Every structure is written in structure tokens, then in C-alpha cells.
Image (cartoon, rainbow over all chains, first blue to last red; front, side, top):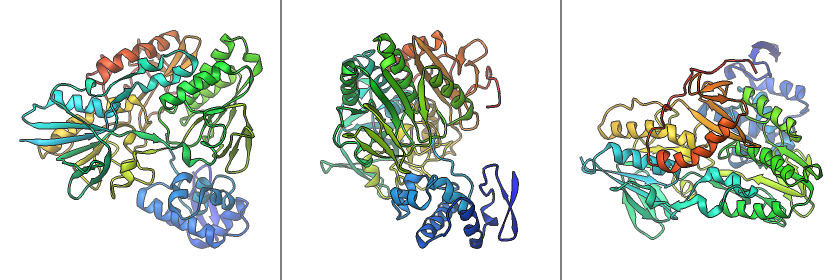
Length: 105
Length: 413
């Protein structure tokens, strides 16, 4: 457990940089996290995914997998990889300020 | 009381649940009806061995109704949908069946058509799967004809049935090509969407080590986007490529089709979300799910269905008696991993404890997470236990539903 500073606010993140408390996240933090991950600008399409991630987390306690995102977020898996090239589920979860998706076993 | 329990699916989970319930409750207490759309019960752990000529396809199939105890009604019908408000199952032939308790045990379906190009040119010729019987038979023929080149084993995405089976396939392929004397002409590659050979760190390290030992290249974090059968390429969503002469792909899995036609029953992938401990549906208390059909953070494996079965039969009895559910499934999973050359290794874990080294079920038992001949014999013996102990819903000697902690060694990954 470490801390990071986004939008001049200190937040708690895990060893891989995922927020441990989604309540500490604010929208202005997203742009800075995205730039650190190599995404220069967050478009409306990015935001559609990020908002969906947060809503899913709030409802289910874990972020969705890429396949579920592709089926339910209104953004296809192909486009998800264009928006978030290095693994959409993990990258979008980081930018959206939610813990690492649990995935499958 | 005269209650009606309807069990959808007569695979491992549905069959053992029906038999456990029938053994526990008198026919005057409840009627049990099992429904399936075909009458062939396939011993699925045997599919792995078919491509290598180590199992005969016909020997893996037995009639479904014959696996059910007396006093269980069997119905062969296609399920159209479940009406959760009316507590009624509707069939494709227009008939329907009401229930006091519904058990969803219709397993996982293969969805190869959901991956671009997978069922296109080359499917069944140089692109195969061994996850169903016709596929395993076709792959056996393809392997027999294979004289050298690049063989790629790929997992499209999780969840899949028996997550260790593709690894076992890679291990057995190494053995198979050595036995044929052409191993030096075959390049074996294992391609996975995970960041290691397996999901859990200690086992991922051990299994990844075995791949390396057997000269199998490991490609990780590969999310399969497209199969180009003509060009012999797997292409990931982030546009990496793995070339092949023969591809063995584990396709995407989803729940049974009728789940999607039944509003409120399943999740986005057609699996039925149930409480991870009681196996009861959170919104529909009359509905339970077991085995591969359940949307749980547990492996889709026969051992899971077996360990869940004990909990489920007990909880259904409590539910029908109007009492709180007090049996709890702990996520216990137990898998023999065949590694070739008459050896296997055993892994045993649950929701909270990852697969660890040691011995199972106690200090003097079978070795865990370590190759041995004893584990290979255990895997072979399991086929008899499956038909004669597991499906009839009997306990396995010395092995209960809860994961044994005794005999395990806790080590950092």
C-alpha cells in the first residue's frame, strides 16, 4: 500500500497503482492518471467506458472483464483496445479509480 | 409435503445433485425431475486423452438416464426459457413444468463463432479444439498426420472449463511428439490471456517451470482477437501475432442459450450468479445453480460440482423446510494435472487458499504441486470413481466438501 498524488490530493493505491478506495477518486484526477499510462487525451468514448467501469464496480464490487465490457459498455472489444491499448480492463480500472478487477479463475 | 424439484441439465453437477437429493429425501417428500436436451453423458476429463490416442471416444459416453437413481424422473427436452415470476420452465415443444426449487446445472457452452475467423477457413483442418468429442476426434486425426512445424495451444479468454486442461494438452503434446520421434521438428507454444501459466501465483510458477522444462514457449497477456486459418496466424486485440501450422484453441465459453432468454436468471455471459457459499440466487430464492453453470469465482471443474453437491443438497432441504440455509461451500477445487510420461501433479485450493505444495488430503497423502507417478495413477483411478462414486452422489473416502488444510505447506510465490 502506497500513496500517490493526483489533482493535488493524496490517495491510497496498491502496489500496481490501483485505487484501493474509489471514494478518493475525482474526475479531474483521470486525465493525469491517463497521461501517466500513455493516453494523452480522454475522449467522450474513453469517458463512456470509465463511467461504466465505476457504475459496475458500485453495483458488483469488482470491475468487469474486457469481454463483459465489450458486451455491455456499448464499446466493442476492438475499440476498447484502441482506446486503452495496454489491456483495457486494467488500464480503464486504474484511470477510473477502482481496484484491480478480480477476473476469472 | 409434496414438493417439486426441477434440475436443468444432466451432466456431472445435475446428475450428482439429483442422486444426492433422492438418497436424502423420500419420494413422498419431493418429486425430482431432471431435464436435458440430449441423452449422451460424456466423461469430459477424458476428452484431453482422445487427441493422443489415449482414450477411445465411444468409451467416454454413457446414457444420461442410466446414471440416475430410481425414483428420479428424466425428461429429454429442449429448454425454451425459465419464467422466474411464474416459477415455471417452458420447453421448445410448448409444454411447461412448475417447480418449488429450480437447480440450474446446464453447464458451460462453447462459443467458437464469437471469435473472428475461428470457425472460418481451416477450422477442423489446421485449427482445432479438444473441448468437445467431435473436436477431439478430428484433432486426433490431425495429430496423426502431423509431421512437423509450429503447434500452438491457445486459450481465447476465461472463464473456461478445467483451466488446467490446455496446459495438460501442451505437456502431453511434448510426450506424444517425443514418442513419435519427431519432437525436434515440432515447436510448441502455449498462448494465454493471463500474465502467467496459471491464475494463482505459486501454481503459476510451478506450471510455468514445467512448460520451460519441456521446451514449450510461453506467450502471456495475449487476448485472442482473430484466427487467420489461411495465413496460419493468431492475432491478438493489441495486434501481436503468433504463427502456427496447427492451432489448438479453447474457444470462449458462455452459459446455456436459454439463460439469456430468461430475464433475471443469468449474467452478461449467461452464467447464473449465486451466493458463493449457499449457491442460492440472490434475487430468486427458489433458484440455485451448481457446477459450470454457476457464475462463481471458482474453477469450472468436476471437483467443484462434487464439493458443491453436498452443500446444495443440504441447503435445498433446509429451504423446502422453511429454515435458514446453513451449509457453506468454501470454493474447494481439486485437479489432477497430467504432465506426460506417466506422471501427474495434484492441486487443491479454495476461495481463500491458493494451490500450495504438501500432501493431500493429509501428511501421508498424494503429493501436491509436484510431479509423481502416484498422482498419475490417481488421475486414471478417477474415471472409475466418477461413474461409480461421484455421479451417484456418494462421498469419496476421506475427502469432504471443505478443503483440508492439514498437509499443506505455506510458501511465498
